[in-house]
Image (cartoon, rainbow, N blue to C red):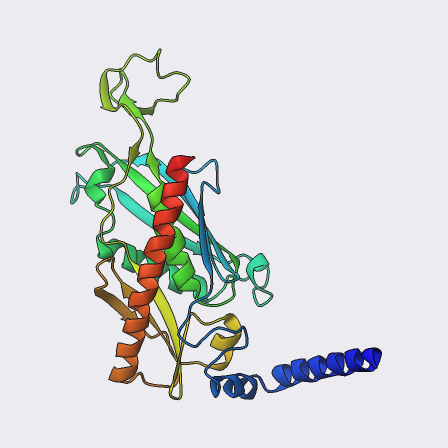
Length: 303
């Protein structure tokens, strides 16, 4: 009897998996009727999220962010540049988002993912407009030298809500960033001072004598929601995104104020009440992300 029961269970699982593959929308809508999702989450709950710092030893700042299975690796590399005439007291930030074939079976080698430049632009707009980074803090010598911060974000696993995870990894990487020790040499050029030669190097004029952490304010966080009929699903998986085409990304700052709304496409229109409900969910999510980031920073400082 036990063997027969096990066979029936296996048969039922295979039938359920076949139904899910053949009729994915109907499969998900059956769960929506019960206000639950296939992974067991309530409709308004985001997936488990984690952060770790220092994932790239050669970078000036780096972080690994995971939201469910969606995984982002962010790394910042600093280089000295000549500031522009229009902004002689400011440095610059350049952001690139990468989706290598390892992140999804839908990404083919040699063919860039169409969504990658879209997310790069969205990340740049969000971070620069948020005021999180004061570009004046990246200035070394007015009109002569400033830092160019190259932020590269690599998607290691693309399982939905890519922008949310990418933005979280970017904020975390800047939280981990340390500006190197530099000085002016006899030729008047900016040079890095390593720990090995710091004691013996003759400085013409010190620029900063110790590594500096950036002061950040108004950090942006986001939550993507799917709008399907009368349902709102927070933090969708890639499967949910592929079958429910109307979704909305809400970006809030650390004061829970609305920074931006982005509706990347889809046939549906978002009603005012739906948008308001998404903002309410986003405020709860921002509180969660602030706590996760704060705990990760505390653990880093202890180590």
